[in-house]
Image (cartoon, rainbow, N blue to C red; front, side):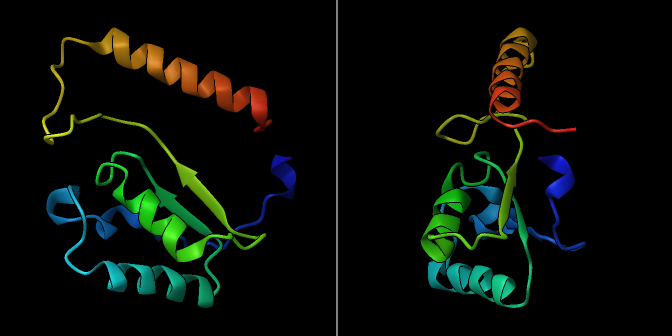
Amino acid sequence: MAEDLTVTRMGYGAMQLAGPHVFGPPADRAAAVAVLREAIALGITHIDTSDFYGPHVTNQIIKEALHPYPDDLHIVTKIGSLRDAEGNWPPRSLPSSCARLCTTILSTSASTRSMS
Protein backbone atom coordinates (compact mmCIF):
# COMPACT_ATOMS: atom_id res chain seq x y z
CA MET A 1 0.00 0.00 0.00
CA ALA A 2 1.15 3.52 -0.73
CA GLU A 3 1.17 4.62 2.91
CA ASP A 4 3.74 1.90 3.64
CA LEU A 5 6.12 3.14 0.95
CA THR A 6 9.29 4.73 2.31
CA VAL A 7 12.14 5.86 0.09
CA THR A 8 15.17 8.07 0.52
CA ARG A 9 14.67 11.75 -0.25
CA MET A 10 17.37 11.49 -2.92
CA GLY A 11 17.11 8.78 -5.55
CA TYR A 12 19.28 7.81 -8.48
CA GLY A 13 18.28 8.95 -11.97
CA ALA A 14 19.45 6.28 -14.41
CA MET A 15 19.17 8.35 -17.61
CA GLN A 16 22.89 8.92 -17.97
CA LEU A 17 23.74 5.21 -17.75
CA ALA A 18 22.96 4.90 -21.47
CA GLY A 19 25.23 6.07 -24.27
CA PRO A 20 25.56 9.55 -25.76
CA HIS A 21 22.28 11.45 -26.07
CA VAL A 22 20.65 8.69 -23.99
CA PHE A 23 20.94 6.26 -26.87
CA GLY A 24 22.81 2.96 -27.09
CA PRO A 25 25.14 1.34 -24.59
CA PRO A 26 27.47 3.30 -22.31
CA ALA A 27 31.14 3.62 -23.20
CA ASP A 28 32.03 1.76 -19.99
CA ARG A 29 29.35 -0.73 -18.92
CA ALA A 30 31.39 -1.94 -15.94
CA ALA A 31 31.55 1.64 -14.62
CA ALA A 32 27.76 1.99 -15.04
CA VAL A 33 27.24 -1.20 -13.02
CA ALA A 34 29.67 0.07 -10.36
CA VAL A 35 27.81 3.40 -10.08
CA LEU A 36 24.50 1.64 -9.42
CA ARG A 37 26.03 -0.67 -6.83
CA GLU A 38 27.63 2.29 -5.08
CA ALA A 39 24.32 4.17 -5.01
CA ILE A 40 22.70 1.23 -3.24
CA ALA A 41 25.69 0.87 -0.89
CA LEU A 42 25.23 4.54 0.03
CA GLY A 43 21.63 3.86 1.02
CA ILE A 44 19.64 4.98 -2.03
CA THR A 45 16.29 3.15 -2.06
CA HIS A 46 14.78 4.28 -5.35
CA ILE A 47 15.99 4.40 -8.93
CA ASP A 48 14.25 6.39 -11.65
CA THR A 49 14.44 4.78 -15.09
CA SER A 50 12.57 4.42 -18.37
CA ASP A 51 12.51 2.00 -21.30
CA PHE A 52 13.26 5.10 -23.38
CA TYR A 53 16.81 5.29 -21.97
CA GLY A 54 18.96 3.40 -24.43
CA PRO A 55 16.25 2.26 -25.32
CA HIS A 56 16.09 -0.51 -22.73
CA VAL A 57 19.82 -0.19 -21.97
CA THR A 58 19.50 1.30 -18.49
CA ASN A 59 16.96 -1.30 -17.41
CA GLN A 60 19.30 -4.08 -18.53
CA ILE A 61 22.18 -2.50 -16.59
CA ILE A 62 20.02 -2.09 -13.50
CA LYS A 63 19.11 -5.78 -13.61
CA GLU A 64 22.75 -6.79 -14.18
CA ALA A 65 23.99 -4.64 -11.31
CA LEU A 66 21.32 -5.17 -8.69
CA HIS A 67 19.33 -8.37 -9.24
CA PRO A 68 18.27 -9.95 -6.95
CA TYR A 69 16.92 -6.61 -5.79
CA PRO A 70 17.13 -5.52 -2.15
CA ASP A 71 13.74 -5.60 -0.40
CA ASP A 72 13.76 -1.84 0.19
CA LEU A 73 14.66 -0.90 -3.41
CA HIS A 74 11.95 0.72 -5.52
CA ILE A 75 12.50 1.03 -9.25
CA VAL A 76 10.24 3.70 -10.72
CA THR A 77 9.60 4.24 -14.38
CA LYS A 78 7.55 6.37 -16.71
CA ILE A 79 6.71 6.63 -20.34
CA GLY A 80 7.09 9.56 -22.64
CA SER A 81 8.15 10.12 -26.18
CA LEU A 82 9.06 6.83 -27.75
CA ARG A 83 11.85 6.58 -30.30
CA ASP A 84 12.31 3.86 -32.86
CA ALA A 85 15.33 1.50 -33.04
CA GLU A 86 17.33 4.10 -34.99
CA GLY A 87 16.64 6.80 -32.38
CA ASN A 88 14.14 8.75 -34.49
CA TRP A 89 11.21 10.49 -32.85
CA PRO A 90 7.75 9.43 -34.07
CA PRO A 91 5.61 11.91 -36.00
CA ARG A 92 3.68 14.29 -33.75
CA SER A 93 0.54 13.41 -35.65
CA LEU A 94 -0.02 10.28 -33.56
CA PRO A 95 -1.25 11.53 -30.16
CA SER A 96 -4.08 9.01 -30.07
CA SER A 97 -1.57 6.14 -30.24
CA CYS A 98 0.35 7.56 -27.28
CA ALA A 99 -2.90 8.16 -25.38
CA ARG A 100 -3.94 4.53 -25.88
CA LEU A 101 -0.53 3.32 -24.71
CA CYS A 102 -0.63 5.55 -21.61
CA THR A 103 -4.16 4.41 -20.77
CA THR A 104 -3.19 0.76 -21.14
CA ILE A 105 -0.11 1.11 -18.95
CA LEU A 106 -1.91 3.13 -16.28
CA SER A 107 -4.84 0.71 -16.25
CA THR A 108 -2.50 -2.23 -15.84
CA SER A 109 -0.60 -0.47 -13.05
CA ALA A 110 -3.78 0.50 -11.23
CA SER A 111 -5.11 -3.04 -11.36
CA THR A 112 -1.95 -4.52 -9.90
CA ARG A 113 -1.14 -1.93 -7.25
CA SER A 114 -3.23 0.65 -5.45
CA MET A 115 -1.62 4.07 -5.48
CA SER A 116 -3.27 6.65 -3.21
